Image (cartoon, rainbow over all chains, first blue to last red):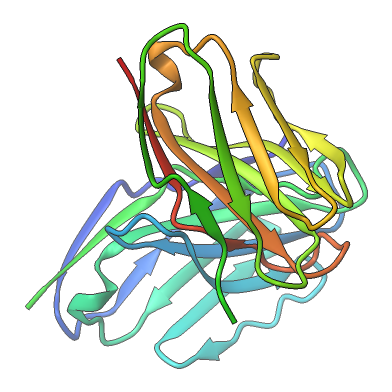
Length: 117
Length: 114
């Protein structure tokens, strides 16, 4: 079974502060994909980033960056210089490969981020 | 390119009734997945279709069913509605027959069962 844990329920910051969201996962698959999605108040899930399990290189994309550590099963996500428009619920998700976990996303409970002006 | 569309956006039904929700994927996308989102259980996978075939199914009772048409449009049906079925139902599509690609989600259908 796959499991994704987002220990932080809510985070509140002032605009321009950095925000780091934690994600820990469990899977028996040897290869898998990790994702971060954003859900603004409108309700639509918006894809942010994807990382596969065999590439631990961390990257930066604009104000987003992520830290994938296979040894600790963590996939943390950082928003640099937060803006009010970043206020949303952020979900970490996991998808398996070559098993019954194919084709589906297992989501964490989500972290609500509030950015105050 | 138009995104994933879901109809209707809001629905109110009575316990015991049945409901059908519709999802049109992004043009060219052949895979459609359905998810249920509730405050208590979070986001849970319902099922995934590709080329009119269900490839994976989540842990939901048989009251939840779905299908996909030749044009990739998908419907999900919930029979004998229960209060606990009140949720946001999200549909997602992706381009190819691979689990490696990200899924693009629609705005969802908010179902309220009274």
